[in-house]
Image 1: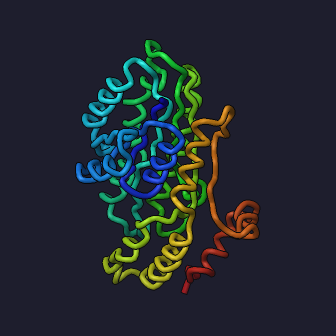
Image 2: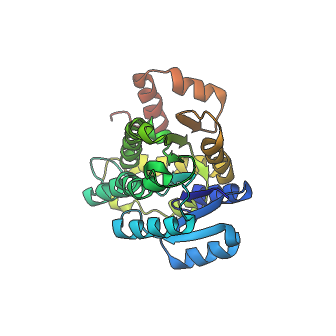
Image 3: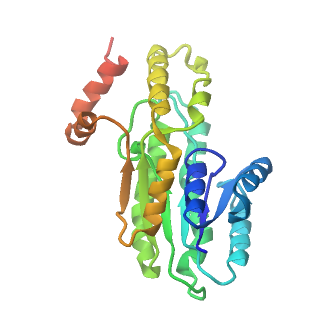
Length: 283
């Protein structure tokens, strides 16, 4: 049975990917931060799932998890690593807390680096292991190629992850390990219910406040109409298994006209469209 490591599986894309991959015959080693989530998922998925308890910013815990997976594989290679775990920090870049910005980068960018360094030997960088080299799937975002206002920290982390992935893909050619990026748009998860409760009162004296209120409403509505997590799970399975995967897959729901406009319109044109939609014109 082929095995895959997926980070951030307690909810959302990670949970959807775990569900699909197990159904397709994989054994999933899934990372969570809390033991109660590990116990819940172990009960849900049974013996085809092994929880790994670590935070993607905790290098020692990640290394311990990699040792656990190595022992379980008994000399075989890992078929895949899915760097999915991440957070989203929002707010105007002129006013966002620098500590929050650093945390955004630490989780979404340094985290995949630490996880990749720990598990790359099991994917085939360690030539003593038996089996074909595995693949790495990095979960980016539509925000990794197009940045909307007020999610600048998140977009910056995902733009950086795209560059990280491209360099990594070329470096890992030496070991036959491929790297694929998946860039989804909004995905229908419980996170949008939590987003509704985000307190933007800290921006009470900001000129952005009325625009932030409008943006939050639009953003949450789009999220609740997003793609099911299992759809992303099926795309992750495809990226891990097709003979010749693309270097990047997009997964964006929306009308064809909107997709065409986003693809062909100039940056300045999109600036004007976004400004009109949110009320970002100078007063």
